[in-house]
Length: 183
Image (cartoon, rainbow, N blue to C red; front, side, top):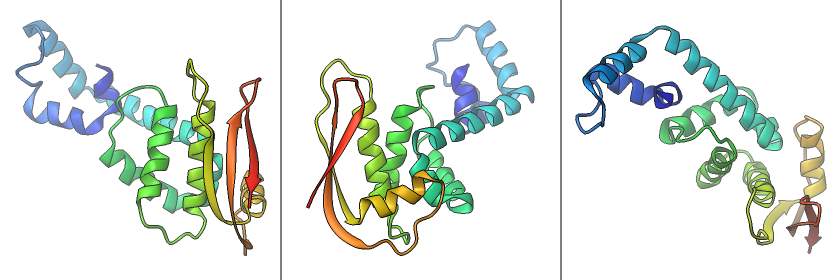
């Protein structure tokens, strides 16, 4: 039932063809789930879920979403969601996958890959795990504080100085990411 909400393409397939024959469903379960799939109320749930996903992406990737904004963000998310239907209600893995998606694509934005790589690395340091996360290294072409500072204030950076360096992040004893620059 959850997949009907989080995966609109799968729901459309169910509406067109019914549930797969190999689905372990009784006749009663099939009828009930087909009725739910056809329900217009499910459209509202899908819209709410999409809005919640967008909100979580913005919360987990504030610098990247500030940089992209508006139509560019909507286009990137639409492409990403079309190629990566949700598989879980957990949003951290989706945010990391979105960063990977952005990093694999060509971009006309001179800062996008650096910002997405930084936020991806930061999420890896914050990810819950039983072992200590490996240090994360992000290669910058542009001056990190001139690039990230304005984004953290909700503004797009302008004319950022080129300053190749590497930021290395580790998780401290309190579980927070700490970053140092290496020239």
